[in-house]
Image (cartoon, rainbow, N blue to C red):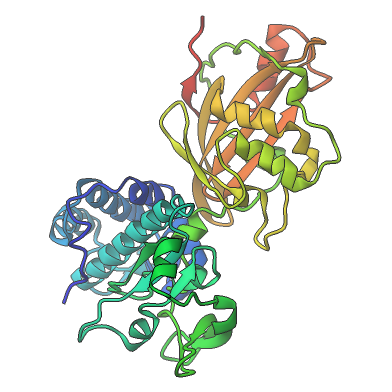
Amino acid sequence: MPADLGYAIGLQPDKAIEYFESKGYKIGFRWQDVAAEAHAKAFTVAGVMKVDVLQDVRQALSDALEKGTTFEDFKKQLSPVLERKGWLGKGMIVDDETGEIEGKRLTPRRLDTIFRTNMQSAYMAGRYATQLEQVDTHPYWEYVAVLDSRTRPAHRALSGAVYRYDDPFWQTFYPPNGYRCRCRVRTRTSGYIQKNDIAVRSGRENLEEVEQVINRDGQTQPAIAYKDPATGKKVLPDPGFGSNPGAQWMKPFTPPPLDTLPQTFPHGAELPPLPAATTIRPNAILPTGQAPEQYAQAFMQKFGAAVGKPATFADVTGERLQINEWLFKDGAGHWKADKFSRGPYMELLADAVKDPDEIWLAWSQAAGDWTLRRRYIRALETEAGDWGLAIFEQGQDGWTGVTTFPAKVGKSDEARRDYIDRQRGTFLRYRRPQK
């Protein structure tokens, strides 16, 4: 029986598409080789070790999302491509010269799993992002399972449970919680909860770490289990599903300093002239010594966001960025807004995103993952005549920012152009119209 995706087919869910298109690539021979958290930021198909084949599968999935088409349409588009490359069917792909295994061919059954798993994750990640924007009026979330003969006992046990949107329960148990999972989350207002005398649970009291078996050999890995307060029985998501794709998508980490990131540019390309510098107002540079949280708040306020109140910002090209407190926290939740002493320049970094001189795109590879990064550049000049740049770079693997007034750069256009050329990416996506 196919998974119930009828509520989604025929629609064009903007946030689901945004989530899916934000992913980089990850190579893994087995599904266990890629952590659940990594799936939220990297597209992968177990056993497909060649990026060009991953791109073929990804393109067919992206088309299905945008057009709202069915699995049969997806298979019809992708199968001829895989067959032509020798990747459709059973068995391994072996390099004739080296004898090395390049991957496992894709059967129609695996294509069905790939399609439905990616559609589920994309739609639910989009739904999570939408619901997170409504927490001011609907702060309570209810787990809803389809209670019929096909409902798994673990999912039945979770049905009807209500938690606040920021409860740790949702970091593990936001659907999908397994292959062909049909569960969803319904939002509730405070008035509804009070009127119906609904108990709001606390995940901290019912969640604990256990060892979960992940393969037929009995291998285990740590996982978060939910302990049913009524029966005491522990339930878990299926192996590989113990992470909230939407939450991982919206929680970037802070990467290394800007100057440690790889730089590339096509040989012989003719670059556009340097944009005119913007004179910055004196109070745009914040005082030093403030708490990192204050610097983070200064950045978020520029976009109408705040701690606990995320916002989505559409830049001048229409690309949407998630603005939230996790931009300024590491994986453990510690504030990092003043890392590398960039805190006082937070408003200048926000201005570079909101009103850039240029936006550049570049592919970057880190730890085996490819991600498309966007670099926002704005030329600055102080009232004293010091020239500099505000640069904000963002990708699915995180962000970084720097505001610099380089003392060694001369005042000539040529010297400044040489400097800014070293900061640019590979493809010019946007340039401010010249007056």
